[in-house]
Image (tube, rainbow, N blue to C red; front, side, top):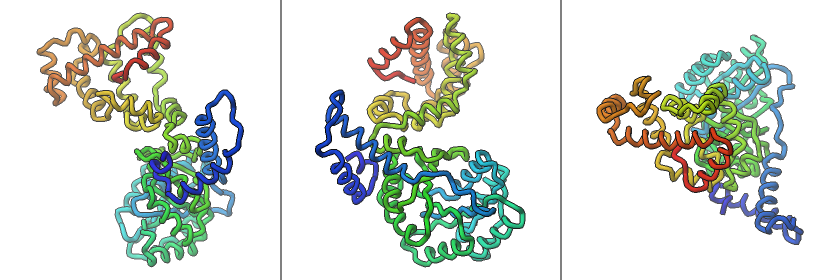
Length: 415
């Protein structure tokens, strides 16, 4: 059920369960674990082993320019993935990259890629939508050779796997540029349709890897297992958000735990490490240690940190299912509420933020009008702030973490 709920294709589920059954029947289990715990561990290990098989870095050792061809269904995120990949190669591999679009059916896609390339300061080949996609691919390759680019990334038009004419075109593009890497870009939320697409593209092209996009969404990533099984090719990258830096090398353990509803705590920790302002956090810790109160300015900074990490929904998506459900039940557990509370705090004067006790009824009315909310919203923010302040006081005292964990067990915190 966990696999089906995660949108793993039924034939893949059956094959996987048969493989696990053959492995576990008759096996002795650790006495410190129950049979159920042992089974979950074995399933997790099997999922991880299956999806990590063949995972490798991009092949960049070929004669420059190394050509990377991106293919996939409409709306899978190829254009954004092309820009993300270019940025990743520029920053991690120190490569000079040229981006080119052959999507003559959607001129907006060419413009989108050009703008992304300009924003990232990456080379872009200006495609003429009047020319055929194959001609554009050849011209882009010639430009990459002439200007000594290390890598050429060719973005192609999104195509339906049932459109034979379009599948013929992408085969011709592939023949024209002889790519070192042909990456199948698939939406992690595509569900069962990902299987048919993977099969069709796998037959049409010599795929060498997969890019899994939109893994920050609600889907549990079952498409990863399905596509890995059907194409027989490793997943090399996963897109983890809309920003151009939101591309990571594929980590099978994370996706396996998400498929089984165990969350992605490791990714959450990395997200916090990457985005939280440590200097600001240490400053707040020092302030609390001196016995000073946690004020609304501090709360504003904390809410901004949550936004920086992609919002509450992105954070909860990485929690194990049980904790995520608990957190989602909190009255303020949504991103709109976070934005609203930031707006309310910004409508206050610096003095009111530092000394919330000075906020009387008339000030509340002014703050509500300034932030476009009802006075009840201001009252709710102040009530939540007082709870947060008490929590911070608990943390700043000796043994505070232990008491705080006890508070978490007794109910869902507001923030």
